[in-house]
Length: 497
Image (cartoon, rainbow, N blue to C red; front, top):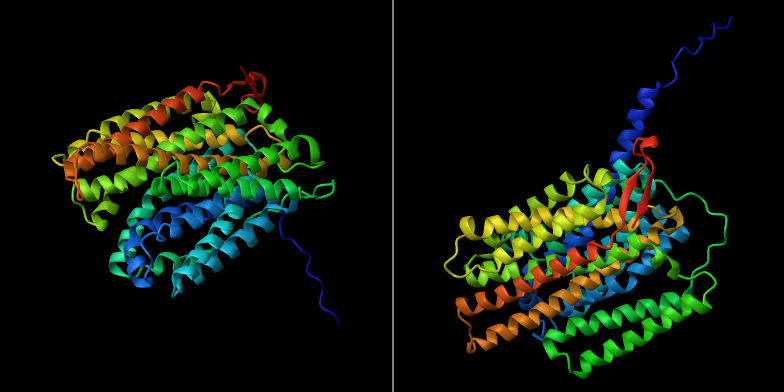
């Protein structure tokens, strides 16, 4: 006798349960993308605090120590455009995973390095992993969050994490260097990278299948990558050797020639160009990248000079300097996250103008800091203004540079935006460092400059950063106004001049 078969009485998932599951997965996608971007940006700043200890431990030559940072920066900037296009051609999840794996492996090798060459090489491969991973995080967000309000919130979190990670790197670098070992600055990426790899495998969707043949514009990829690397290398050497040095002019001229060849290849030779030049006819994309250049030139240069101001003028220890960055990190996070609900209603232009104006005012205020200043009275206010303003700018810039493009160009737009930011960071820092040095030398300081002379030089650099932010305001005026269709209750948007 066989037992009676019990009918399956389980109820199908309710719509609310399905929405809850979808909402949970979307939040996990957002967490994975933000964590990937946090690793990228953090690693660009966290090493700075540990450089003197690294130099002593690995016996770096004084003139070669800058390679620890430059190897990362040059490779990141050179490969960002290619990394973004790879996500379009071969799948966002696949490329995201490749970037995470390479970044994690290179971090492990760098943390275990016993000689300068190994560490510099590991930093270069870290940069390659970051160049592949960073555009993929934006591509995933842009293609996963399709509603304008949801996309703005996702970009808000991503932007908040991006800006705050740069400031938090100084604090974490100081804590790890002072209480543990500089090696953990890199080795900490191993458990984080493993967890991120698993999360991406589980929650990040793959790009929709494309019907056309997947082909990579190899001549374009080679020329733009080598051209950007040469240009950024030349810029990074300028503050050491001077703009007239052959070690600066050679890479700059070579990079310019390669980038000119890249434009010709894209316009006349390539059947499937790496960067279709028509994307620059999109006014929102072109203007947003210009805003990104000036905004990041102001923000990331400030990280460098703010550190020197706290340590060499106000006399803070590395740990105290890191703690001094907390209000700036908090301001960036609040600005990026808090403005997310405003961008879909107002469009990015008013947010960009207001955020850059706030940032410029904060930088001008901070430029007046001297050896007699106190943190509470003279530093806290301006860094909160700068942080909140730049957090809003990072969010609105990302929204303007990526919204309204077809899905197959999401990686291209993301790579272009990240490349522009890296160029802005490099050019801004070198330019302001030259101004600062000239000001300090102009005070007649000898071998060891006084705190007042240093304050004057760093104040000049911060004033220059304020002018970069003001130039960003002018660029933001070119961002199109976003008009919303009442019939669709805000779900349809169009751009108007």
